Image 1: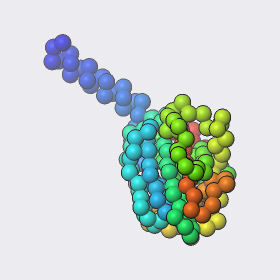
Image 2: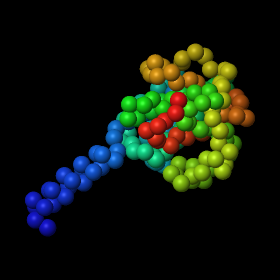
Image 3: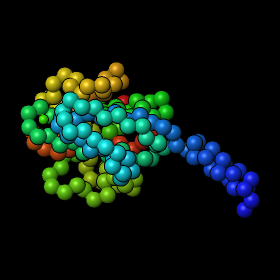
Length: 172
Ligand SMILES: [Ca+2]
């Protein structure tokens, strides 16, 4: 392949990929510790209840955002928001596109895969966290309307999972 054809192929490939995917800003805070995954890849996290992690990711529809939140006692809660395609996909009590599940022991297999079926495994809309102080995460974009949430059946010193399937039509 000549250099000019090679360059043309690379340019077209980049154009196609830029149409399919775009940069999205993910913001997460949790009481007490957070781990963030994008399509199964670890993207960072926080170690304290009042920290906020913001990550710029290259996302497209169907991608999976997974968040593991661990409470170590006292107040508990998690809040997340993905700014994708001009839509703020926010965590909200009994609403929105994020799904939650409490967890004890090992993480469920394949939960970070696109093919994972949340409905078949009883993932539900996030519930209220009644033990989170008002807006503790420093620097979180609260203006988006995101709320601190938790998961059904989880209490103090528990671990929950939050999962979002990225979509242009993210419901809030
Ligand atoms: Ca706590």
